[in-house]
Length: 263
Image 1 (spheres, rainbow, N blue to C red):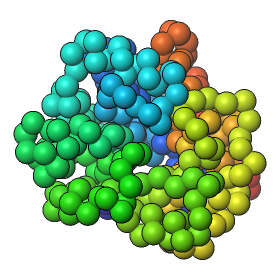
Image 2: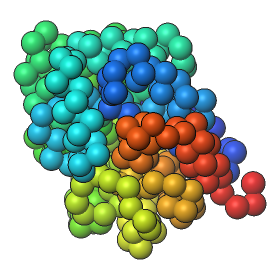
Image 3: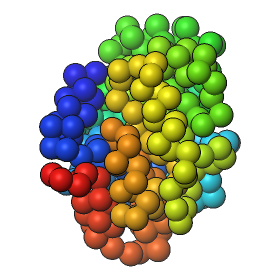
Image 4: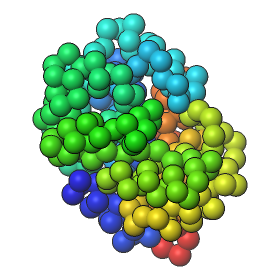
């Protein structure tokens, strides 16, 4: 958790929101994934590594397609941990695994305890759990804590004040705020609900708040950076890679937009 806390503190000291890109592990292939991750880590504060899954209910079509392609190539959870290990050898920045609960529950090398143990051994700092309610996560949280892995849960504009307080109390490292109801995906404009959502979360926790779902470029990143502590970008990066466009240019554009006015 120290790496996560330090990353957000450094961004705050520099009057900017932390830039948190997402990549599906192994997409479009393992070698290219590591190369693209290196490009992002030039400007990223934290890197979110998506564990491919066959039924990613919270992901939009772009990330779904990338997961399907990786699974067709035979990438396993163990392979993902190996890629995380290779990234850890190259960077001291926080590495966060995003995974649905089924791969944790069914992990062949020890279930929950084995998953978090192996994630930590690979060099991961935290795990984002989009489909596991904190109400049902006692054993997973205990296993993660034992392994030294931060557990990060999601809140949304539809969350009540009571729910916000409960979910954020189960989070470690940061809180992941979903800017819109629905699935991931690049959008043309930032949700008008972001400022109010961030304000409501700040009333119940002192943890940093990262906002995701919908950021695709500088125009959509800047309004989020003005309100939140972190900006999560995924689908736009995956699409850029898939279309063979300039990932480095988009990386710099979004990272620059995370800088707040007056810096």
